[in-house]
Image (cartoon, rainbow, N blue to C red; front, side):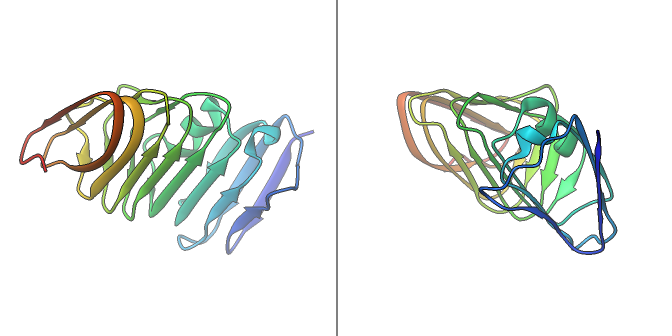
Length: 173
């Protein structure tokens, strides 16, 4: 049956552990609590009540990414999926973004990131093309073709083996 977890602190599923459920309701009662799920895919559909501090989703699914991020604000966000490309929904990360996947793109809404961003997709494309994106820290990337857009200034560094395209409403450095 469904799993329900409520915490006044953080919710953590350690690597090497596995919780299998058709759906999981997570409730954070503290804005300073973190959500760390190292094997998220087995937890089924995720629903979060409350706003967390840091989010770490690993071995996850696209629907879980959408339900945990869309329209929400987190301090730092880490998303890792070694098996499938990831499409980022609109969200805000106030202290950094780290994404590792075989292909990284974004859906229709813009993302806002304060702090550094690391996008790792060796041999695969990285495509963040929404001109409404606000990325105020450096974007470090590794991918085949890399396309980045920001409504303001854009700072980046990295390796694009198939081409690099950057568009910004301010300085590109």
